Image (cartoon, rainbow, N blue to C red; front, side):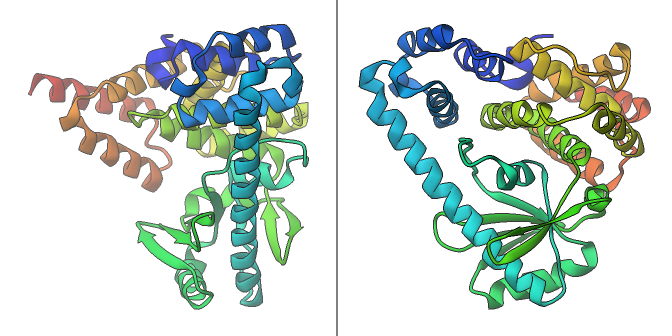
Length: 332
């Protein structure tokens, strides 16, 4: 597996992800990483992970010249996250009054349950509602003072520069509501999925990110979430995750993401959802889609929409059909 080609993470970001996600932090190796990089040349997603890593080991373990910059990033992350949290809580409080209780999606569920010492940059808050509630949600958001941009089966809701909420109103996330617990945050009340459901949702979202040309930021944030989540999963959670993945027809691409995480971070394989042969088919398709030329982008988008509308579209037949389309595209 060519990790760099598969997930767009270069050796600098890959080395940081490996150190960040290690079971036991190698303080000396992390300090060496900071000394060996040109911090000004790093992309924002890498600097955010680096700042979180520095906060974890202590700023005295990093070059003194970088400390003001790293502290500034942490302050920015806290400000942004606080704004995001306030926005989603305000919207949810308005929804609750109308009998709508949104479910937290993957990384947002983790963020709102993170310990206060955790550092995680949230670009947006992700919540889901039942399809029948979606149009009502849009009306409530507008009446509450939010700006609303509608998408097929989803919406982007904004209020100010630090508040952005992504809402999904499709049946695909129905499993997140099963056995979900109620979580009170600020003035809002959410449904917080079980750890197994969060894991499946997190891996499905990361898989969709793989099909974009530039997915490094998503992959690095996903690595941070995976480290936090894997420490909380019990054997029963893993078995429940396998059952959910089977119902969603998602075992192969979920396994591919686990393989990527273990390869990228040199972590032990916690469990297998499916065989290596089945995962290889998915990997070949991802590589083909990621290496598609400009004219292949509509094909990738069509395939993603197909995945949203047909949960069984990741069967071997669909994968082989998709691979044939990619080959045809190259020969056109």
